[in-house]
Image (tube, rainbow, N blue to C red; front, side, top):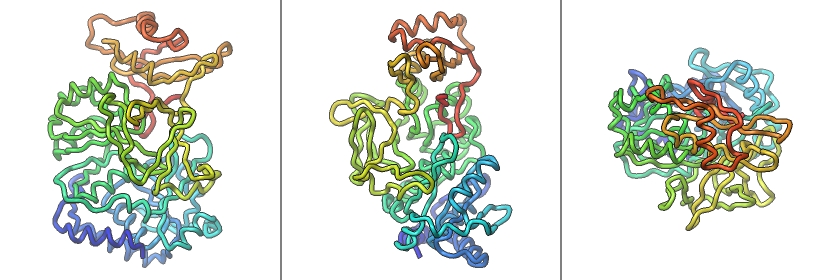
Length: 449
């Protein structure tokens, strides 16, 4: 039995009638959830689930899926959440993680007889030897075979010790197989908050949930926040219950943050940071730069080498199941995030190393150009990316959404002139495309390819 997860169950029992989950019309208290947990544990025993077997949960967040997640963790299984993917992508992930079983609300537990070799993987054996449960998460946006990272779930949970209870309602926005979603989940449990699970993550549905359930904390991405403004949902729905908007997963343009502060003057905007490989990192915003932050986490070390941020965390993954070890010899993890050092130890994220546009040897950060475009009075969203070019290797292109309520509409040439007033010539978009919606990923981040 997992010691850390068993302590978590004691915490649920102690919380009793305190409201834990809201999912559609269903409301579940902390005490009631332990009954769901026990039912899931009994279901797994009847199926013949053995400790340390890798088991996929094919579901997004729900009371039932969460009950099975904790029951399997308590049994020291390796849990592999897979949410909202195509059949082809789901099969790929099941094969990579060598899932012995799958669980879904429709089919309960189904055994996979082809995946008997999971015991041979050195990382799975390591967890078995240490008598601990595991959690497998997959990297997003990876071409080809996805990277499967194995967490020691007990070690991950120790980063969320119980705290004084708070009467907060948090939206569980990010998906079940995203490290940011688990950070929201574990933080809420730590302080006894109520979690609201969306059945639909469209901007209007989320705005309606905030208004209906008086949600106080919204963790999301800058791209999604811009959609709230784009559709004027802050004017259509009463979002005054919001106290904190936590943003992360991609850089926040300064111009967008300024518009958000104007739309939500009473909200505390907090930047979040972390990686799937190291877990969420506690940070605070820098005083002199709203987009910069300081790492204030005693379990995490940070350093910068050649502009890239490296982290060393007590909750780092054991490694990848299907790729070489991502760490340096002395266990530093290169995050792939390019950063700019600020005063007093603060850092500002410039973008991903893989997203840099190389124009004839000159490096261009998409966020810098997006910020300039968003500063134009007629632009309400923009996406900048690199496109192959025979002369310079790459050039800069941009998708732009114009404000339909403006009487005067700028031309593409006007926007290029606007950019050239603030940027070097090689940073000015060679092509600008007027669109109704910028391209984004399933996790509400801008696509950069």
